[in-house]
Length: 259
Image (cartoon, rainbow, N blue to C red):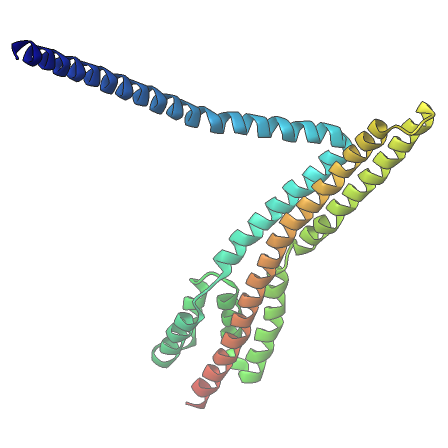
């Protein structure tokens, strides 16, 4: 009986030791795995970014520095003009309801000069149009309306400034891509003629290089088209504000002159 108890005690101690060793090994393995995972996650984005950069560089060189450079220039210039127009249009946006309330209060309490001062201190095309109308208010409502309409055309020209260049880049970029493709196809057929035989390697390589410019041109055109449509929507919104608020200003001047 004593031998059995001693044997069971020894077996229990051995089992506990084995369990502790296994648990320690498991924790060590988990820690090592977590460390390797963190290192992999830390290095993977960098490696991916480097591979992507090299791939873009390779495609740029294979597509031809001449055509690819011109297409890239169209993208840079188009984005620069688009960003400048977005900043200008955002600064040109005015809270017309608040401005009309201020002008109405100024006309009723202090007169036209106070209303003109409010317009002078407010940025945006709407305030500029209001100022021109108030400046001719002493000549009658009809003259004020003509001044508002005429100066509204001037402000519309300023809002649409340089949009024609973006439209030009949208049209040119795909056309340059197609031109590069045609030239690349001609070079591929020249290579076939010089080789004296139709090789799948020669044809596939030439066509792949030729199509790179087309893809690049289409991507540039799509990007610039998105910016162009956004700018048009902003201009339409500001134009509607100008028209509605101009009508409200003329009605306000008509009521003011009747007093």
